[in-house]
Image (cartoon, rainbow, N blue to C red; front, side, top):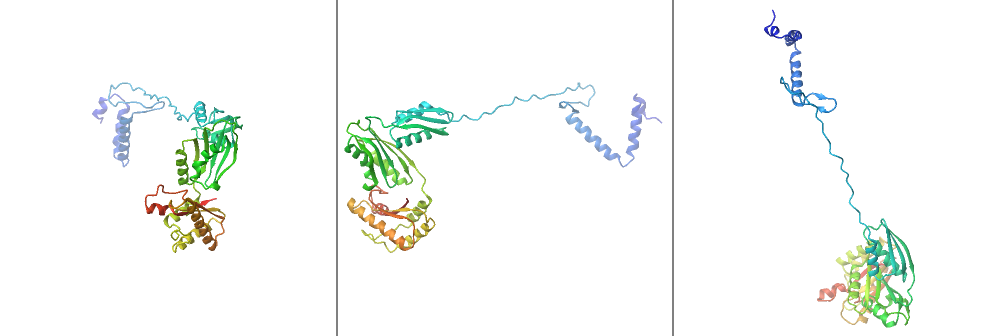
Length: 367
């Protein structure tokens, strides 16, 4: 018997397909088969048929649906990311900086990150100052030194190279009174034997001195601040200050921290160590044993009360007493005792007894 559905359909393959489907429905494989067909039809309805060239095309399961068209996607053009511009060295600005610092004969040229310095400077300290100015410019990777040292005929020049224990002056000035004006501010911070003027020539024929160049490196922030303060208070001469702040050596930091917590104290107006000082000196000796090759200055400092000469003498005696105490504990480091009196007050002016106690101290500085 032929099914009505078979009679109404003109496709000769369809009756055979339906008979096969009825036969399959009676087997155990039928449920998986139906499930796979359902999954396929669902995927077909969602994504369309795969196209070899352009992903998927849209399809419709309804009769009379439009002819599917292949879709394409146009990618945006590749965007080129450029690195931000690096600092560009301006030769003209560098020239203005150098001239303003008192070096009109220096001519910088620039190629990329390389600065070449040409021209003349009056002395070696001036050359070092110009090199530091060039290196301080943004974007500089290298500085080529083509500078020549050539003292200008008839011109006065004076450079002070500042260190922790010494100030060295070099140059040419018209008189000793001019030199005294330049040295004056440093006498408020350094001992007389720490100010070296052997490199200064007195020549009455040179022009008046206009600027004193101050260069050097200091790791002690308190000393750096005192030098700056003294130079800024002087109006008779112009000081061009180009001092660098150096990092404190590790041994100085360890000893500073130790003495900040437990200062080395003395009997009143005396170089005799107090009863409590013994324990602190033991701790100092332990630190020094970790750095047996380090040479140190043992600096004695007083408050601002009393005469300057008496304070210098007392501070020297106290520094000597600390050196003797450390030697008695077997310390073999090179130790140099130096008394500064009230030249390097930590607190100035002294407004209280506490300020005076802070200024009375022993400090250790690497030689």
